[in-house]
Length: 144
View 1 (cartoon, rainbow, N blue to C red):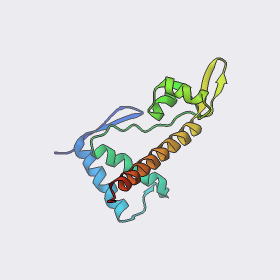
View 2 (cartoon, rainbow, N blue to C red):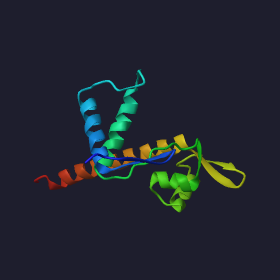
View 3 (cartoon, rainbow, N blue to C red):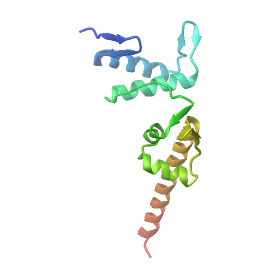
View 4 (cartoon, rainbow, N blue to C red):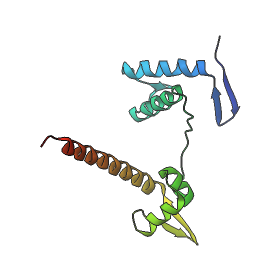
């Protein structure tokens, strides 16, 4: 049974599972064998190949993937969604100075790069806290 690709709009392409599986296998084979990717005789940067591999792996695992870009300046609602926190929690972090923001009229806006940096810092803090918790657990479980 042949797979199908449905171009619903100029910006939306939907593929069925068999096409996804074929593409994922092809991408993984190329990246595992370190074969250079090219597009119209132009080699793709490693970062692009890595992104394609991650997207296709997520799709193969059944996840919904959306690829897009964010504007340079975003709203507090969008920032909260990116960070995976509530908007009131974000506003508290802004008030406490944990994250930079600026006003556009009466509205609070954030730079996308600042939000991404803050997200990375949050992730690193969680990793550090988990390490400390594991060390404490090991310390408490040591025989006296």
